[in-house]
Amino acid sequence: MTYKSGFVALIGRPNVGKSTLLNALVGHKVAIMSSRPQTTRNRIRGVRTTETSQMIFIDTPGIHKPKHRLGEYMVDAALKTLNEVDVIVMVVDASSPVHPTEHEIAKQLERVRTPVILALNKVDALEDRALVLKRIEEYQALRPFDEYVPISALRGEQVDLLAEIIEKRLPEGPKYYPDDMITDQPESFIISEIVREKVLLLTRDEVPHSVMVAVEHMERRSSDTLYVSAVIYTERESQKAILIGKQGQMLKRVGEMARHELEALFGNRIYLELWVKVKRDWRNKPALLHQFGFDREG
Image 1 (cartoon, rainbow, N blue to C red):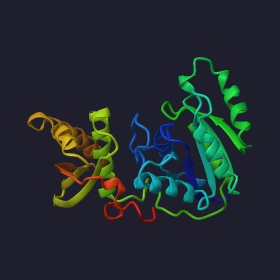
Image 2 (image 1 turned 45 degrees about the vertical axis):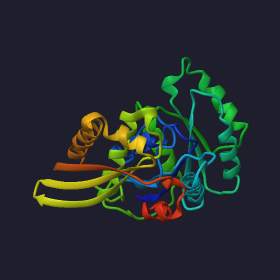
Image 3 (image 1 turned 180 degrees about the vertical axis):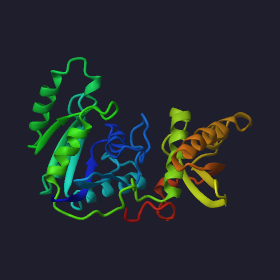
C-alpha cells in the first residue's frame, strides 16, 4: 500500500477557526484557542498520523493589515508558508459574507501552484444550512478552488472528510515523525502558549495582544514533578497591574487554570511560578522580537 505524507498550511484571516481546526485534525490541543482575533503568532506544527498517511499541519498567523512590526512578522510568516507546503487549506467563516481581507488572500494564492482546498468553517452557526451553497458561489467568484468542504471544527463535523480530501492531494512519502508525536514544538513553547491563552481568556479587552509569555526556567525536581518559572511580558504598567490583580488574584487564577491544563497534558505535577514584567512597546522593537523568537524560521 502506498504511504503518503506532506505539509499542509492552514491559512485565512484572523478568528475564522484555524487553531480549532488544527486541534480537531490532530485530535489533541496543539494550538491555543481564543475568541479574540490574531491569537496565533508562530507557525505551529501539528501531526496527524494514520495507517495510510502522515500530515504535518502548519497553523499560520492570520493574514491581516499589520499595525506594528510584530504584525508584519506574522503576515510575512503566513505568506512565506504558501510556497513551502504540499497542500493549502484556506479556512473561512461560512456564517458571514466574504471579507475584504479574503480578496487579498485570494490574490496571494494566484502566485502559487499548490492545490488549495476551501474549508467553509462554522456551518453550525448558520441558521439555514442552504446558505452554504451561496457562500461557495461567493468564494468561487474570488478564484477557483480545488475542493470545497463545509465543516464545523468546533463540533468536528466533516473534519475527517476534510482530512481524506487532503490525503488524496499528498505525494508519496515517508513518516517524518514517530506515530505518537502530535507536535514538534518544545515543551517550553506549549507551556508559554497555554499561559498566554489563559491571560487572553481572563483579561478579555483589558489587556490586548501586547502580552508575551517566556519560560525562563524548567527543571524536573522528581520523577513526577516539573518546576516551571515563566514571565508574562506586557507593554504598560497599567496592564501589569491588571494582570496581577487585587492582592495578586488575577495572576493566581491564570496560574491555576494553566497548571490544571498542563498537568493533564503532560501527565505530571506542575509547579508553575509566574511573574509579570513591562517591556515598553516590545512589538515594535526588532531586538525584543528577536529575543522572543519572532524572526526565526518556524
